Amino acid sequence: MNEFSLHPGNKAGIHEGLGALAAAEGKALDETIERIYHPKARWYGSNPINELEGTDAIKDVWQTLRRSFPDMERRDSIFLVGESGT
Image (cartoon, rainbow, N blue to C red; front, side, top):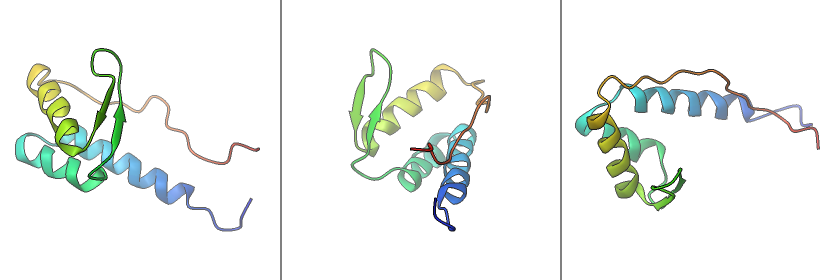
């Protein structure tokens, strides 16, 4: 293992991004998605969504979820990061 690890910084960035997605609505949600996802990101979800590509497709899913479940909450039950030991 290296003396310097990017894992804590990556974990903090992912955690912040997920929190921002949970808190944002409307145009702010679209802006958050554009900020945290690569324009050609591949997003894998369960059926019937399956696989998406690009921020426009990801925005459609998130906007639909937020409209359908206005009281949706996000909770961190388990949030792991680190070396696998291999």
